[in-house]
Every structure is written in structure tokens, then in C-alpha cells.
Length: 220
Length: 307
Figure 1 (spheres, helix red, strand yellow):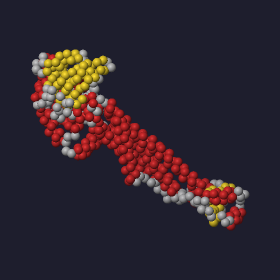
Figure 2 (cartoon, one colour):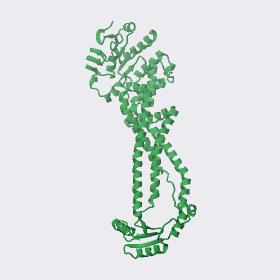
Figure 3 (cartoon, helix red, strand yellow):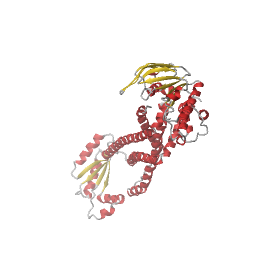
């Protein structure tokens, strides 16, 4: 699903990634870890096409992302679900509208949108909260709205950047369990997290970055 | 759902959602619409001004007539003799003599300044001989040489070729028309920039939404659509308000203009906008609004990138 081939990313402030190579299979779930500034976010941004690598190449589902034209980016993003530490919800829209957003953007009709949004909210355990606004929800619930939005399009790939960064351990475990469920239904999942104690007990592959370089790969 | 239906659905959504959004901030929307409306109203009133002046001068056909104004010292008998002499000429088809008395009576009747003239102790108006030359309108050289010839006579103060002043009037109107066209082009640009700036601010307010839209796979076309419709709505509303304002002004001027035109023994009514013109104003400003939005969006949307 994802292949990094000797990828480096250079910023004016310095190297964010240097010579990183790894491969993630279809349907695999993996964690990306390392202290802050190790390059976790940069790596995710390269996959999400928010940045372009300076050297090497990133392949997504066989496509070389260096050769993607700007106007193709939206269509590729529709096949991935992005989840953020700060949820990135629209505070002036209801839960329903937030989750429906990717479907509206892709031009689904209202019946399909309604059905899929309810299914996604059901998966994250928020059915019945459609009409609430994000601020009326707890942090854990807001993140689950973010997750529902990421999966409502039935993406092949889920990328999550510190999804539990703002949550307490109990809620974090709950959220991680959700990701496991998506992986079990065939979605590829890559999660950046520095919560080692949580991720090491889950038994998935862990990719560790240190100052932009890959240092270990494998289960811990 | 087929592509066409989806396309129209997307447009309908943007069309109504942008209207809804404008209505949620009524104060800002009203201010913007008023600023635009004033700009458009200025342009529309200039247009109406030119249209009415054109109407006023439309009845003024250029003619080959000339008016020969005689010196004050020339007596009516001498003037009458001169008229008869002129009529003998082969280059002149017809003459009509207007004595000083007749001129005064006519002037009092039509100008509305009769009372002012009564205050003068002598008639200030000269006698006039209206000459209809044999030469036709196109034969300018013949007309001008006849005018020069008459001008050189001792009794003649000056000769006025009708053709000349109608020509002058028309060229002045043409100049005014062109000036208005230039001015209205500038005002059209003002409308584009005002809408563009409004859309730019709106885009900044909704930056977060644009970022998220990009992250969930929205195309540029999708993101910019509601903003373009916002420009369209603003232009449309402003065009309508401008039409109302200018029509109101025209109606309020109707009575005084009728009074004046009656004094000049003239049938003149202020022309307002026709239905087509009203539609053209509203559709035109709506288009300008959309253009303003597109112009800003093209650059600004590239700049908003998820980080």
C-alpha cells in the first residue's frame, strides 16, 4: 500500500527525514513512533500529499506521488481518511454535517450521505448525536467524530497523527480499539503516536524514527 | 447518479448555501450590498442622463437653414428690403423675415422670461432673416460660401448655420457618451474589486473550512463554487438596489422636469429604465460580482494549503 524508497525531506531549517525506506502492506496496521521532531508528522504529510519529498520516492497503491499533478490530489485524498490530534472539526456545523463533509465534497446524493453518515457514527458509537455541535461533546467524542469523518468514505488507507494526544489513557485505548476494528475489515492503518506504553501492548508493527532516520522496525 | 445530475446538484447546493450564509451575517451583507449599489447607481444614472439627453436632441435634425441676425441699427423697413433682395438670389430658395417686434413676442411667449424683458426700456432682440438656401444639407461648401457672402453685408451682425450648431451639439453628446462609457468601465472595475475584497475576507474567515475541505478531497472547483455564488448574489442584490434608487430619483425628478419642459413648450418626459435595461443591470452586476470572486479565488485558494 505504502512504499518509502530512500526518502528524504529537507526544510530550510534542516532535514526532517533522511533516507527513510519501508513498506506497508495492504490491510496492515502499523504505528509510527519517535520523540517529537523525529519526523513522524512529516512522514504522514508526504503520504497525504501535503508535502513533496526532496529525494527518493513515495509510492501509494503503486502510484508515485512525486508525479501526481495538483488537480489529481483531491481524487487520491478521497481514498484516504485523515485523523488529527486537534480533530479539525468544523465548530459551526453539526456532527452530521462534519461527518457528511467528505461525501458532500465527493458529490453523493442526500440519501446515500444520510445512510453512510449514520453507519459511520454507529461504528464509533455516536449514533443519536447527529444534531449536536462539536463543542457540546467531550474530547473523546470529538475525536470519534473525526474518526467517523475519516472512515465515512470507506477509504483504503487511514492515516492518524497523534489521534490520542489529547485524550486520557482510557479513551486512548478505546480509540485504538476502533482503529483495530477498521484494520480487521481490510483497511490499511498507519498511526503516529508517542504513547509507547499503549502501542507496545497492542502487538502491531512499530516503525521508530529518530531525528529523521528510521532506527528500528518490528514488533516491540 | 449520473454526472450531469451531480453537477447540477452541486451547483444548486452552492447557490443556496451561499445565500444562506450571506443571510446569517445580515449587517455585513447589507453594508457590502449598499457600497456596491452606490457604485452601480452612479454608473446607471450617468447612463440614464446620456439616454435622456439623446432623447432631447433626437428631434433636432440637422438642416440646411441659416439664421441671419441683423445689426440693431438696421430699421425694420431696411431689414424687409434686405430680405426681399436675398430672396431674388438664385442660391436662396426661400426667406422668412422675423421683425424685432415679432421676435420679442415669440420670445416672451416661449422663454418664460417675459417679465424680465418688460423691465427693459427697449427691445434687446435683433431682427432675423431665416434663409433656406437652394443648396442641400450635404453641399457644405455651397452653404458655407453663401453664409460668408451674407456675413460680409453691412447690415448683417452674424450668420448662424443651423447645421453647425447641430453638429456641435452632436459631437458634444458623443464626447459625453464616451466619457460616460469610460467612467462606467472604471466603476465596473470598482464593483469587481469591491466584491473581490469582500470574498477575500470571507475566504479568510472560512480558512479552516477550506483547509478541511482540501484534506477530505474537495476539488478547487468545489471549494470556490459557493464563494463565486456569494459574489453573484452580492452583485445581483446590489444591481437591484441600484435600479430601485435610480428609478426613484428619476421619478422624483419627473414633476420638476415636466414643469420646465412645459415652459419651453416642449414635450419631454424623463425616460426610466426599460425592463430589458433593468434586467441587464442586475445580470451585469451579478456577473461582475462573480468575476470579482473568481479573480481573488484563483490566487487565494492556491495559497491555502494544509500544513
